Image (tube, rainbow, N blue to C red; front, side, top):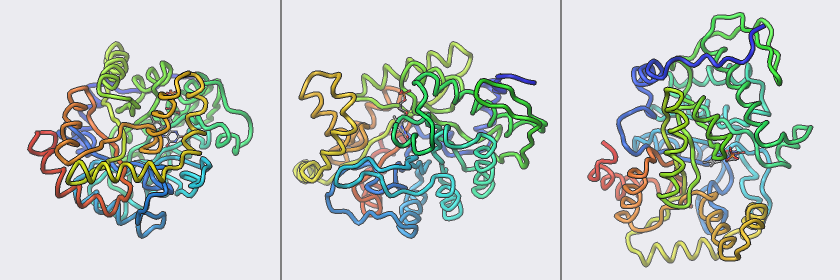
Length: 380
Ligand SMILES: Cc1cc2nc3c(=O)[nH]c(=O)nc-3n(C[C@H](O)[C@H](O)[C@H](O)COP(=O)(O)O)c2cc1C
């Protein structure tokens, strides 16, 4: 039987295939844009501040269609099976992500539709097949964000115990090796690994996108960066400021380059933007005032207890409320674009963003922020 051997084409061949397929995530825009988290209640913002945002299919499609018209490159969901508690039960109402992507593929024209998959919850042959199906529905616009699963009580819903941290990435490595083989080999595929045994497996049709769908992972630990550098097109990073982004970007790209390949860097955060600083500050204060501090305490608990500094814990909780611990873009349109320029200079090639009110604020983004991004050369 064949054991672990990721059938990765040379990086040059991969890049050429990506460019030839014309997938938006490989266009020439220096700062790609994606909508993140619009498949979960409260999106990326743990607050009770007023919003028309709601989780139903009509509203979900509306958000995707606005982003599609504005030329965004991606719709990227959060994979969530369990709410996080607090008075919002943050993200507790949510859509499954492959089927969500399939629906949006049908409802949109050019934007890429991603699924986010907890690899321990789904067999790679099933995930590979589902991914091909959405790739066909979207005519080659599907992407896959792999997550190893970190939220213990969520993973325990599936029975068994959460694997040790680095074991999750060893499991993920076998998982993606099998998926890549299902996407690229005629078969039969045989695989005898530590976690998976695959016997005489076949999967047809093959993806439209060559050699397989665009792959993303948000590992930020040493094991996560190593996995991502080896297997993915993009590393989705969490950072406190552009300096930290630059450091993580150069670390993960360094690992990839040592293996003769490379990858892109994505960040994430909510956009809190109004015409004036005063209005922006009012909105920011309101979001925090009505923030779900209980869920923020729950999420930052483990991390906070290590920091030993109350200010640091409070800052971490604020960052959670303002956008899942991402890098919130706060200010007037000009200030937002200044921040995006700094991020691009730091090596971040795309931002996956959320809004307090996606459908209401996206048109404003299109009118006020996009033209400034174009003027700054961040987007065509
Ligand atoms: C931008 C970003 C998006 C993520 N999205 C999800 C998600 O949708 N579902 C999930 O369970 N975990 C998600 N995670 C958690 C990661 O998949 C990962 O478990 C976490 O970053 C810890 O990995 P690490 O220890 O290698 O850094 C996300 C993390 C980041 C930074």
